[in-house]
Length: 114
Length: 112
Image (cartoon, rainbow over all chains, first blue to last red):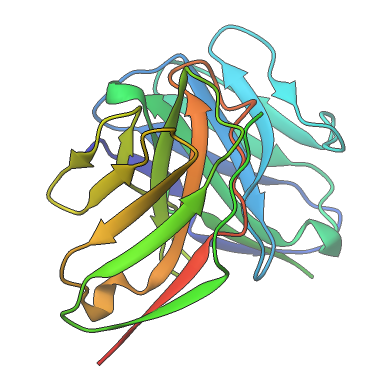
C-alpha cells in the first residue's frame, strides 16, 4: 500500500515553545490531507482538512492560530503547534487522500509538553 | 453524516475467525463502508472497503447486508498481531474527511 512518512515519532518540549510535525506521502501525490489528534484511550478526532494551495479548514474548537498548517506541496504538509501547553499533549496523526478512495495514515507523533 | 456503532470489545482465539459487526443504519446511498485498524501507538491501517457488494482481500472479508444497514468484518484466521482497535467508518469516497467520523471502535484481543 501507499506509504506516508510522519516525523518525529515523539517529541518532548517545554511549555511555550513551538513544535513542528512533518507529514509526507512518499509514493503518491494528493491534493487533500488531514490532521487528527488522539488523546489516551479515545478515538481519533479530526482537527483540520487541508487542500494544497488553499487555507486549511479547521474543525469546530480547533484554533487555527495555534495549530498552523502549511500544505507546501502535493506530498508535504506540516503542522506547527505554537506556544504549546501541557493540554496540547496528545498523539497527532496525519493522513492523505490517496489512490483507490483510501486514506493513508502516518505513524503518528506523540507530543508531550512539560 | 452517517455514524456507526460497534461493540466496545471482543475476544477471539488465535487461529479462529474474528467476526466484527458494525451497524450503520443511517448510511446514504453513496457512502462506502471502510474498515481501519489501529495498533497501539501507531497510525490507523486500511483494511478494506465496499459499497454494497461483499469484498475480500488478502487481509479480510467484508460482508454488507442487502439493506446496507450493517456489515461484518471477517479476519479468517486471527493471529496475535491482529490485536488492535478496529474502526468501521462510512464516508463518501474522495470528497474529503469532513464526514469522516471515527467512533470508539472495537478493541479486538486475540488470545493464544
